[in-house]
Amino acid sequence: MEGNRTPLLREGTTLDANYLASLKRHQVKYIYIEDANSEDVKVEDVIYEETRVLANAVMSEILSKNPPMLTKSNLLEIQKISRMIVSDIKEYKPRVTIELWNLKTMKDYLFLHSVNVAVISVMMGWRMNLNNQELEELCLGVLLHDVGKVTVADNIHNKPGVLSEEEFREMQQHPVRGFGFLRDRGAFSPVVWSVAHQHHEKFDGSGYPKGRRGKEIHQYSRIAMVADVFDALTSDRPYKTGWAFHKVLQHMQTTMTEKLDAQVLKTFVSLIPLYPRGAAVRLSTGEMGMVVENAQGNYHRPIVRVIVDRFGRGLEANECWEIDLSKETEVTIVE
Image (cartoon, one colour):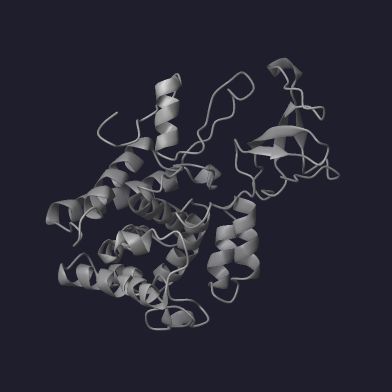
């Protein structure tokens, strides 16, 4: 353990009492474990570990100070990271879906959120046939979309309740300030700056800071907003508990349809399994299991491995069985 940072738990680490206590202290609620029932269920990131570790480190350095640390050196690093993320995702394209990964602590939310939103945005951009240069520009913009938030006081950014009008006005300044930071430092190009400026603009004109609507909002920002909403809603924050994937998708497809670009939202939905691999679920039969696979094009009806029978008895590995919900249509996931 280094300072106050969460210890890095690599694959194969045995969780002793000290590790468990540290995870609780750092508010890490979920981790993947390996046992006989799940040893063949691999939850893979869509980018390499080396890429994510480097991206997290650089974004942490930039977003840890006010004003943000936008030096020539770390801007070059961000350019390198953007190329790595695009390359990783294009290499992974045979199975591009978003699973559970990189579970965030509240303390590290800002920089981990920036990297997650960039990865999701590039996945959508790739599906929308953006070319390499466009994908790299998109990634640069989204990695830097929240640089203005470093100017917002912690007691506002992490307030456990509803913001006052004055606090919300202060929060609304972060896109303007982020745009200013990037423009003043000549950080890449105006389309990169525009993501910082426009990622809270909504398709129906109800967003901020300028109330832009429709195609007045740059395509990169329309992509970033969908990714930003998803990652924010699935994350724990001081004022709320993160929602499950299926709840977020339902919210985005019902109450937010006028606020989001329809094409971007449709692309996003095509990437998201309602119940990610490795997730624990309760079935309508009373049994409990884990999601072991999501068939492409049928992400709402996964294959579930039953590990607890309807009487509550935990099953040994040789007693487990799998249910393909795309075929067993009378069985549903209830929780």
